Image (cartoon, rainbow, N blue to C red; front, side):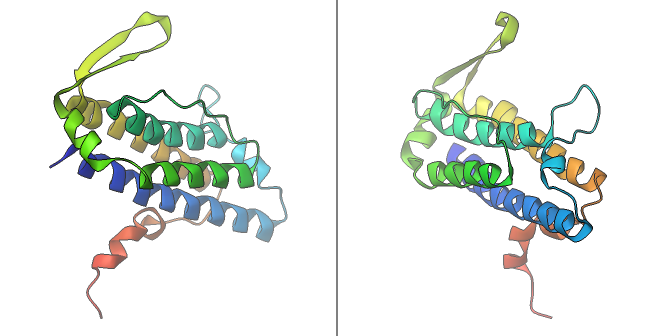
Length: 173
C-alpha cells in the first residue's frame, strides 16, 4: 500500500468524523443549556491535554504528515479558542490534505524523515516508517482522546459517528 493511501484519505475521513463529534458536542451543550466552551476546556485527567488541544494535535499530525513527506516547512497551528475555531482548523487541514501531492508523498517512502522532540530526542526513519509508526498512531491517539473527552462529558456518541465513512460500504437492507 502506498504511503499516500495509508495516510491522506484516512486522515481526511476521520477529520470529517471529528467535525461530526464536535457538532454532537455542541448539540448536547445547547440541549442541556451550557456553553460548549466547557467541552473544549475538558480533559480526561488533570495531567492530560484539553479537548481543544486534542483537536489541535489531531490536525497537527495530519498537516505535519503532508509537510514532512513532501519536504515542506512545518505549519504553526494554534489551539482553537472556541468551537468555530476548532471547525475552521479542521476545515483548513482538510483543504491541505485535498491539495496534497500524491506522487510526492508516495515518492517519500524511502526518504529520510527526522522528528526531534523537546529535550532533543530525535527519531530517524524513512517516510514509510514515519507514516506507519509515528504519524498514523499519533493522529489516532489524539482523535480517540477527543472522542473520549466528549463521551466522558455525556455527549451521546457511538461507533456510527466515529466510523461514519463505513456506511458507504453498507449493504442495503
